[in-house]
Length: 337
Image (cartoon, rainbow, N blue to C red; front, side, top):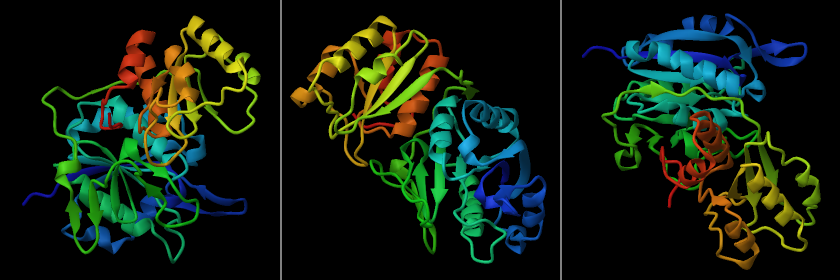
């Protein structure tokens, strides 16, 4: 049986960092050297791999729209030459990148697996080796035509994932959708949970770095401070609301903000702050004002998915009405209606 070919795209992040006088930091050429010394990667079970090291290598705290475009473009340029892709990435914003790529890579027919580690390769005890090896094996599996995140034994849909822990090895979870695969003694793919392949041709949509804001609601919040932030330049707002989408209604400042946003054609999307469950605008009186003012529900989308989906729809050039409609539609398995 012919071995599959997988492209590894290294963006930076803990997995390939080395110790410096200022703490862990990525270093050009260091990861390729480490991989060349790994005997496990010489196994016949491991697919052939090619490593592409992006420049500059970044801590994931510094990865945003321009870097998402760079990663997506690298996949697009190499799409026909490989059976799958592994993106090595820092954990802090990995769920954002996984969500963004899931929208940017349209009609994807090959696995794109993001992974990283909480402890770098340079440490004797690390989770880097297992995460990389398993991600490579999954990337060679042609039955997973979507962007995923693999970490500590679980393969998650990329746009359903969120970082849960800063210091545990099980760093990610998918609160509202079951794993696509579990890696124990064997790698077991849950095929019923995986997206189906489309017959449409693969394409890529680059993102425009549009002004988007995320507001988290908290007890005692003074909505008046938001009014000056809602300008004509602001394209979208993601509101992290209480429970099933509830907003305090103890003053009328937020209504003024909603009215101003409507005048400025700003799209407002409501997520729940809860890890599990769904934002259902209108279930309670405290969310009635949102419903009356055209605010749309993210349902059970993560904040990461809601933010990157907004970027994607704005970048497609859709009108405000079209964006509002499509935010509530399931495009890549990111929400359950």
